[in-house]
Image 1 (cartoon, each protein chain N blue to C red):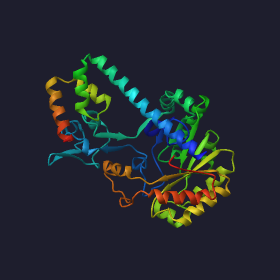
Image 2: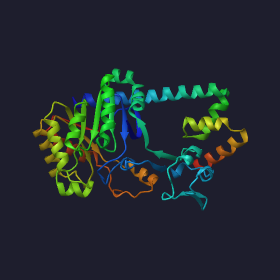
Image 3: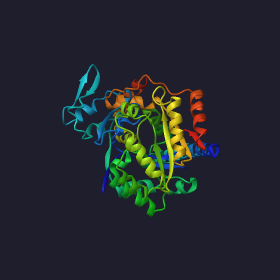
Length: 80
Length: 299
């Protein structure tokens, strides 16, 4: 009983990881479709800003290129 | 009907059976020194600061209408006495370094949010868990959401310290499928010292709950040097067995809550405590298994 319960929790944790990845990817695809950026530019932006919410990602996309570059420099400075 | 919610966590797998959505209600009458959700204690909303995420852009300083933020040596410092928790700095922040913890939600809003994952509850035998804080502190709101879940066929769990009026617990029990009931220390003097309240009501309520036909899993948060001594563990095992409860979850202390104290600008009294060793955990589990049929480590 105890073992089956813990194995169930592990199985559910694996499902959760998959769902998080799946829904996260779908959300990013939606944002990319909205902004119309190409794959390369969008992927670079996603990896440049690191751990931010989807709301912030949308705000970054809405900025001018110069403003965005300035902020992304600050993001990378904090990570270093 | 509204309540103060500080988090809704989807796909939780340690708060009851299956895949669950856990609704964290704000406010707790206990002040456990090891609390890993310090943001849950106060009933009012609070400002959460993640200094490590700040990119020093100064957007918060410009946005604050209360002059609660100032620049100090290249950093942005928030005066919590001046902060009115209006959330303008949160909206302005570019790095998610700021958050307001705790928001007022209607029962319908919570039901709509938790209803999104019904397919996962059905597939996994999961449902919704109400945690905190102490969810019974907002019992009218809790009851409203519990009844809403029941009418939608969603399994419900209430994760409680048991520190509430017995009549409240009784009413909530009518609308709940499973209780996760915390037991920390059976010695009242030590319980007072480490949680700030007597355990008399907690034990009375556990007895009252066990007398009903509601399912209970007792949860024992295990803190080395606080409640992991053999005497306390034997006493807990004995009490749980005498009440006919067949399941205990051991929850080993972990340090992940420490960072939250810093984000809230508070000191943590348990900073020096380390998580229990695997060997000690197994010893404690073995002690409990002498009296209780199912003892699990983790939720």
